[in-house]
Amino acid sequence: MNSVVRTLGWSVTAVLVAGAGLASAPFAGADGTSPVVNDCVSGQSTIQPSSMLLACGDGGLSVRDITWSSWGPTTAEGQGTEYRRVCEPSCAAGHEATGATHITLRTLKDGYFTEAVITDLNGKPETWPVGPLRH
Image 1 (cartoon, rainbow, N blue to C red):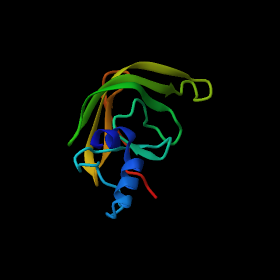
Image 2 (image 1 turned 120 degrees about the vertical axis):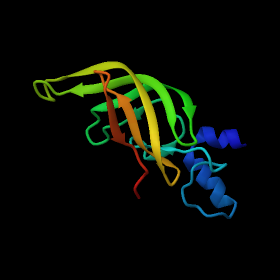
Image 3 (image 1 turned 90 degrees about the vertical axis):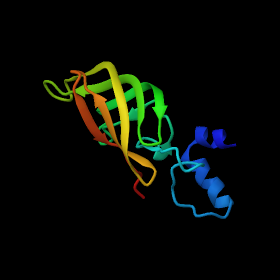
Image 4 (image 1 turned 135 degrees about the vertical axis):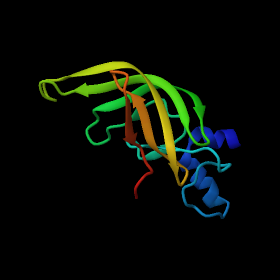
């Protein structure tokens, strides 16, 4: 059952914990070691998402088709494709640029990764906040 809980993510984990009569506060995972990351699109916490929206305010930066090479307990590493809105000459008249990127999730707080580091389209590291969820 542990592998099923990890696959389905935090919302199922919380239901199982609440049903067992334990505290229902968010936690890292069924065994307490698998961190989660905020998905600002769905409002859910997840493990090993295949895509992540990093610019949650305007949707201008995402990483898609992520293949994770490691996940937890303190960092997660993966490869994916970066999709970035290029606002030149303006955002309305701009375009979308894509390219391969490496993504690292790090800095745990209460079982959530709180930072995503990607390589931008010029190969330079860039850090984005990714959670935890706010209620």
